[in-house]
Amino acid sequence: MALPALLWRIRRGSDNTVRRYLLREPLRAASVALVLTTVWTLLSLLFLAVLVFLSQELYLPLKPRLLESLLSLFFFALFFLVGVSDTVLVWGALFRSRAAVFHAQLPVPERALYWSAAIEGGLWSSWAVAVLAAPLVAVLAREAAQPWLYMPAAALAMLAFILCAIAVGGLGSLVLARAIPLLRRGTRGIVMVVTFALVGGGLFALSSIDPGGHPLTFMHDVIGRLSFAENPYLPPWWTQQALAAALESRWGDWGYHVGLLALTAATLAVVGEAIAGRRLRGFLDELSGRPERGGGNRTRAWRPLPLLPGDLGLLAAKDLRLFRRDPAQVLQFTMFFGMLGFYLLMLPRLGRAFMLDANWRQVVSVLNLTAIAMALATFTGRFVYPMLSLEGRRLWVLALAPWPRARIVTAKLAFALVVGVPVSLGLTVISGMMLDLAAELIAYQALVIGALGVGLAAGALGLGARFADYGEDNPAKLVAGYGGTVNLLVSVLFCGALIAGAAVPLAIGERWAWFAGGAWTLALTAAWTLICLRMAWRRFGHLG
Image 1 (cartoon, helix red, strand yellow):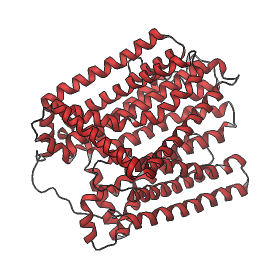
Image 2: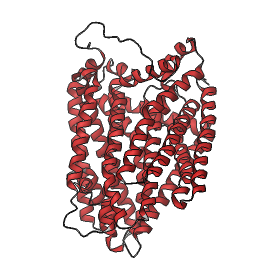
Image 3: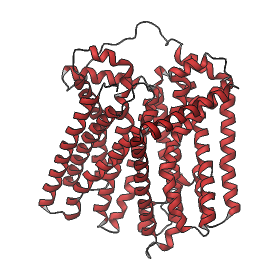
Image 4: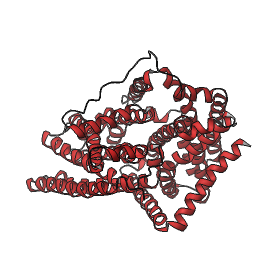
């Protein structure tokens, strides 16, 4: 009866949330529906534009194979996203939150605790599939031989894909819980392990791309074979094959791959349940009660971050220390910039387009700028947006501190800029050099990325203060909630508005256009930053 009681708690919490939105806060419910509708519409138009582009006579012979490669890459990235997010969510629910300690003291079997955390984490992490994959599946219906049968078949394939990713995340949370006590403070070792894994994966991916033996064609040199995403032993490829089979009405192949996904998910779930049944409370004891090796006083003196005023440097140093002490945050930060590094390794393949058509130089430069901007928006949404809400337990200390609360918000802005902007600027410069862009163009892109970093950080803090939840201590849930979704959409709109004006000089190339693009970038960033910071200064610390 323990598991049904825990599931009842999850269902009751969901019912209360839905009832609150529909009855007490209908405006917020309408805004949620508007956000989802807007995101789905934009993604649907984007996927439809890609299909129309591939339907041109020039690319029509390559369309089936190219569509298969792009779908494999899409599901490969989506599986990685959902798996890592679910790992962090389940790990937090089992070992990090106050509820985890309370549940561990109840006469509840470890297997029930594991299943409740896995189901709750899966519900929170699977929203990415609903937001990103649902428009893709719907748009692909126009390519299906039997659309009325394709839609339910594609829905079952996506369900099996979600279950497989959630099962990987649940098992990964137990592996993470076992690894942290074995590593020094749980952070440095995680960074090293993840870095080595990403480097090895990147080398494997690059080595799997074989350009030899093929004619010099634009699509091959730009896209490549991307065989690392088409590994027949990985669930993303099974999902792609299931969708391709449903499009072509090959129901035998569809059933085989969907069954393979479901069987893999069931196997991983059973393995995770078995490990949790034996070691869950032991893992919790190691994470929360075992002293560090060496003993003694290991407290270090507080040193303000350099190049900042004393109070800002001290507050930013506090945020940096709290960030380093959270293994989940460090894991996601490392994974995030690891993906950016992998993107950087793939850029030379895009540069080959210039050998075939010089007009693609401006196109690729804009796409490169957009990719880095989207990555920066993801970074600020994941790490900057929840910062103010996570101060909930320490609000009484900050209220008694000898500086105004507005200074605390400014310090968090400084922390976000010190951590995120230098990496983004370095990535912009290196990627521009790898694409063989002109020095003036690289400097202009660096200006745009720097402005984006300031504006996105300020926007995340402003909305983070507006939709703050000081009772929630799990940053992943804050990001996946209503406020995090609004922040993501607003960040995308800000990036679109800024890049749309900044891209004019790249298309025109005249001197006046460069001045106009620079003025647009600086003016929009200044206005946006001032508005968002004023919102954060005014709203931070308000409990009502």
